[in-house]
Image (tube, rainbow, N blue to C red; front, side, top):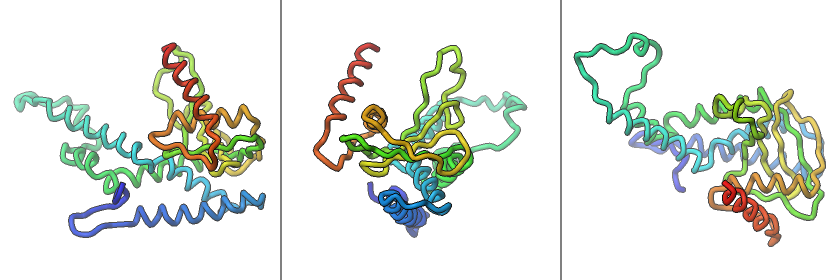
Length: 245
């Protein structure tokens, strides 16, 4: 999707976001190489993992389109509201920040120039302040898969009577999984920031990781080999769940 991360001001093309992503990717590749040779990671290396994961939570095109689409829906709904000029607005609604329809329309039309950078920064900040990292080492015969939406946010099942609000990154049990190679994946969980444990993944763990990756992918699933055992098995499982529903 060309120019997705470009900010247009009507005359010039601002490539700051694109260039920043390139710098973050280069830094991440260096950290991954250190992980692959089992080298000790520095504080800077760990910080780069937080930044890279936070970016991948925000940057997939389908995620950007999802939020832009929400703003389009808000604008479309707002334009159907008829305002009677003879009726004063409710006082409580006149307090605090306001947003015009034109501004909301710009949020829908120009994510890069409006809300995207703030959302990107919030993702990184929340990860760094509330999540610790475990490094999962795959010792099974099957690889970790990745996709066009590799950073997956997972929430454990919650009893319906406790489900008051949609789950967020602060919800109990929230996890973010991110495969970074066929043999390694990052697991973010609520605990003190930093790198904590190296966890060995057995067959069941690899299956669960790949299940999350496949079911959250938009269009592409990526493997380093022709071993697609997980894909068929997981898709069969998804079909069974949907049939039961």
